[in-house]
Amino acid sequence: MRSRTPDRLCAEAVDVARDAAARAAHPQPLGAYLGAVAEGDRLVTHLFASEDPGYPGWRWGVTVARAARAKYVTVDEVALTPGPDALLAPAWVPWHERLRPGDLGPGDLLPAEDDDLRLEPGWTPGTAEAPEHATAERAQVTDVALQPGLGRRRVLSWAGVSEAADRWEETHGPRTPMAENAPGPCVSCGFLLPMAGQLRQAFGVCGNGYSPADGRVVSLAYGCGAHSEAARAPEPQRPAPPVIDHMGADPL
Image 1 (cartoon, helix red, strand yellow):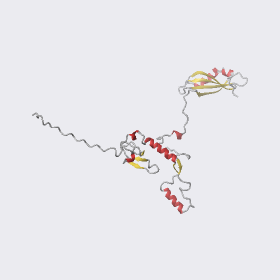
Image 2 (cartoon, one colour):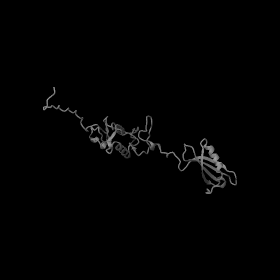
Image 3 (cartoon, helix red, strand yellow):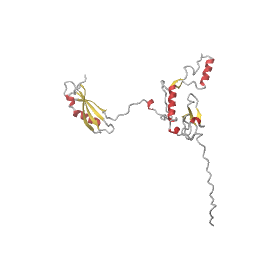
Image 4 (cartoon, helix red, strand yellow):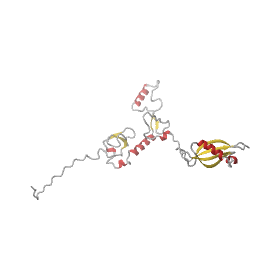
């Protein structure tokens, strides 16, 4: 059982601990003495402030000990440990939670986990390739299913579809400043390219090279100033007719 009262001889061995901490901190100077902590029977840790500029708030801990009935104290361990106000590295975050859009570069691989909630099985085992004992009708059905892309191992789940829709709505949706000041929504724009699939009734692709959303998936309620029906090109103004003075005389 750990004793709460520091051993007297170990607690008095401040100079022994300071000498060990100074050697460990070299070439940086050793800071002020911060006190002692009882670690157990005849086991005490002395704390010294660290003056290393790379470790603000850290402290050197020197643990000293003595054997039973011994009068000599020896150094058991020296370590640099963080204090209550120490500058620490941020908590470790798994790589798949640190990724952000745009982090993936050429040659990088981003595997999807087996339990990814954004995906669900797209076909049952055995439908991608007909086994040798399968009937001709079964093989023909498999060929037809592969043509429209039904042979994918996994497809987007409802959670994946909802997540994508929320992300697209946030960047190119009706509540963006661009859409709020647009002359009309994308659903009435001639540059909108329709999408296929279950999101075709809510999203499309912008095909206007002058639009900030060119080549991007946009909500049908989105809009910008490059709307095809925004306004007609202004016609050149005709100059005003000349003013002729019929009342006065022209100087010669």
